[in-house]
Structures are given as C-alpha cells and as structure tokens.
Image 1 (cartoon, rainbow, N blue to C red):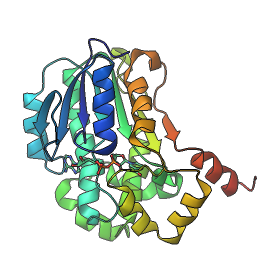
Image 2 (cartoon, rainbow, N blue to C red; image 1 turned 30 degrees about the vertical axis):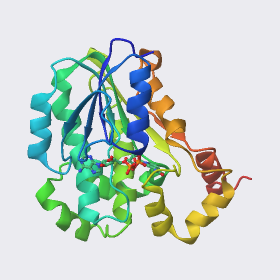
Image 3 (tube, helix red, strand yellow; image 1 turned 180 degrees about the vertical axis):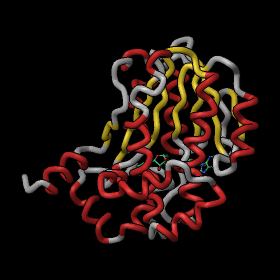
Image 4 (cartoon, rainbow, N blue to C red; image 1 turned 180 degrees about the horizontal axis):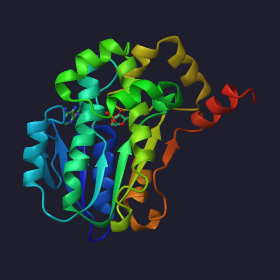
Length: 258
Ligand SMILES: NC(=O)c1ccc[n+]([C@@H]2O[C@H](COP(=O)([O-])OP(=O)(O)OC[C@H]3O[C@@H](n4cnc5c(N)ncnc54)[C@H](O)[C@@H]3O)[C@@H](O)[C@H]2O)c1
C-alpha cells in the first residue's frame, strides 16, 4: 500500500508512532523515524530531534531529503507534563515542522496529525484557538495564563487547536494535491495511558468501564497508514475517530440520544 513512498514519522520511538513506523515499513515505505528519544531497536533511518525547539526542527528539516511523500505527526506529550511544554510540542512544534516541510513534500503527499478524542470540545474554544494561530514559543506561558490554560487543560487545548488547524488546511496545498487529515484515538495502551487515567480520575474510570477494552497501537497504525496512502486521496481536512465507539457514545449523550 505504501510501496516506494518516503515517509517521515515523528514520535516513532514509542507507542503509536513505533507501531505506525513498523507497519508502514512492512507496507513497503522507506520510513525516516523522528523522536527526541532513540528507539530501542532502530529498524530504518532515525533522526533525533526535539520538537519543542524550533532550532532543532530546522536542523531536522535540513537533514531530510528533498522529496517526501508523507508526514505523520505522532509525537506528543501527555497531560501530566507542564502546560507550556505540552503546547510547544503538541501544537507549535507540530505546526512549525509541517509548514517548514511543505517545500520538501512531493505533489500528492499526505499529512496526518495525531489528535485525540480529548480534542472533541474544539467548538467551545474559538477565542483561544484563534489567538494561538500566531503564537510564538516565547509567548506560550503568557498565553496560557491569559486563556486560563493550566495543568491537563493544555493537552485538551493542544488537540482542540490541532483539529481546527487540520480542518482549516483542507485546501491549503490543493493545487499540489497535498492534503492534511487528523486521526483521533480514544484511550490507547501506551506509556501515555497512565497519564490520562491519572489526570482524568473518575471520568477515566467511567470511560474505561464504558469501553470493552483500551485501544492498542496496532488499532491506530493501520488507520494512519491508510491516510498516508494514495487510497485516501479524496479525504481532506477530516478528523477520523478511532476509539472503539467512544466518539459516537459521547456525541449521542451530549445530544440527548441513547
Ligand atoms: N495513548 C493514548 O491514549 C492516546 C490517545 C489519543 C491520542 N494520543 C496521541 O497519540 C500520539 C502518540 O502517543 P502515544 O500514546 O504513542 O505515546 P508515547 O509516549 O508512547 O509516544 C510519544 C512519543 O513522542 C515522543 N516525543 C515527546 N516529546 C517529544 C519532543 N519534544 N520531540 C520529539 N519527540 C517527542 C516521545 O519520545 C515518544 O516516543 C500523541 O500525540 C498522543 O497525544 C494518544
């Protein structure tokens, strides 16, 4: 499905990113894995980069080849980390990497952003999301203070803003056939899961009772690979819930259905 494609996959040293890199490789892609941490076993090419740091991202861009067929933005920090760091990695770093990489993307390339079910509340965050559009890394702390984004809220906000940015880019590079979509997992059994359970407390316990099981990275990786492939060429600016039915459940409950 991905034969002959060169793909950049961030967050590839753990969890969903590692599973996606392995699956994409098995589908015939040449994967360039990016992460702040070295993987336990490097299957293909690995470039170390810190996505909270623009200089590190710019160095990464310089090291990447000039023709890339897909970018999977999977790296992310959990809600237990400092609010400013979460926004720098999950939102600002992701956007900087993506926009700087566009000149190196081939026509028809696919960009896939790992958002989350946690981003579901984006319609209620219009003001802060719009204010974040021009946010610079040095202003993140002041921004969080101004908009009351502290603690775990930063994670939710980063995913809300990412879903909106994905939709806004539905046609940005349309004349070159480059498209952007998001995939939104529910709770997935990776090192981040314990952070979610810790942050959400009783609500997470309720969610886990509603679900038959948490997701596995292997539930998410095929969806990301499909979105990176030419088979999904007419899917643009969407956010695909991949969550064992949780999105449907929340939507129905919010709107008074069973
Ligand atoms: N696990 C879940 O329940 C869940 C649910 C919804 C969305 N997600 C999202 O899926 C993505 C992958 O998460 P995961 O569950 O596989 O977690 P994970 O912790 O296993 O993987 C995250 C990866 O991102 C890397 N990373 C963190 N900060 C970085 C930085 N500054 N620069 C470069 N790399 C960095 C980490 O080193 C790690 O390898 C994240 O964006 C997360 O928000 C996860």
